[in-house]
Image (cartoon, rainbow, N blue to C red; front, side, top):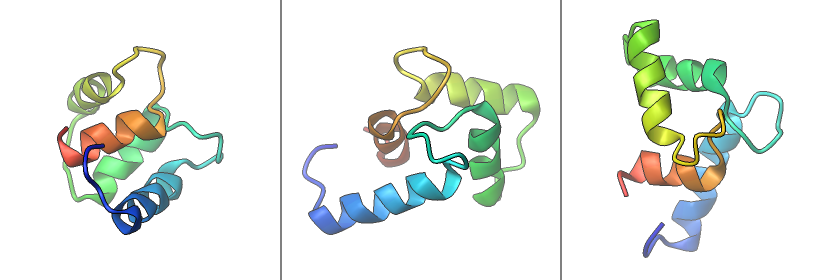
Length: 75
């Protein structure tokens, strides 16, 4: 996450938890698609899948907070 301030990290954690619908600490594909829709991204299911795969660095089928932070910040 680099040199993010504690406030920025807290804000990012809040954003993560907005989309972690079952509060299990992971964003799954359906939750990620909701996130993209919330960002006004008009993506097909295939485009959403590609974005999800790009964010799921460890390829475990879910996006953890560190993966989310890297995706969100472009790191």
